[in-house]
Each structure stands twice: as structure tokens, then as C-alpha cells.
Length: 94
Image (cartoon, rainbow, N blue to C red):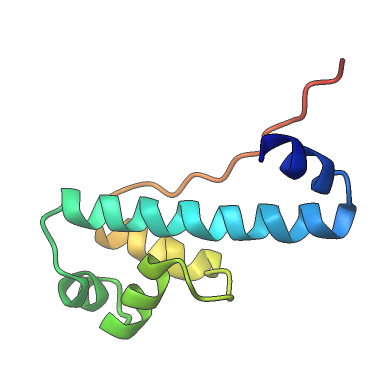
């Protein structure tokens, strides 16, 4: 399986969509973990973030094709009394 993925990731279009889906899943997990750590329900987080429970649920599910905006993530971070960090990771050059 790893060999197949490694081969497929050489295709730039496949790689783009793979990384996009991976990012959406990671964001979903981070938001859910942070909400649970804060002891909040989705509805409570939504209220604090000036959003809706449906938006939080959709974000946490990781099944939405849309990538959450930085504005929404900043609102969520603020509601959780957290700091939103964005970073770049560089590929190692052999």
C-alpha cells in the first residue's frame, strides 16, 4: 500500500488533492480535540465563535470538501482561548 501511495504522490494533481484532504482531516481532528479539551459542546463552541453548530459539526467531521477559512479558524481559536498557528514544512532534499 505504501508503495502504491508513494508512486501516486509523484503525480502532481494526485499529490495536491491528497495533501488537501490530509489537511482537512488534520484540521477536523485538531478542532475536535481542542473543543473536547475545553469541555465544550459543538453548540457552545459555535456560540463562542459566532458560528453555528452545523458549521462546527461539518468542520469536525472532516468530510466537507471545503477548506475552512483562516477567519473561521481564528474565531474558533479565540473562542477556545488558543492561538492559531500556521506553518510551512519543507521537504528534505537528498
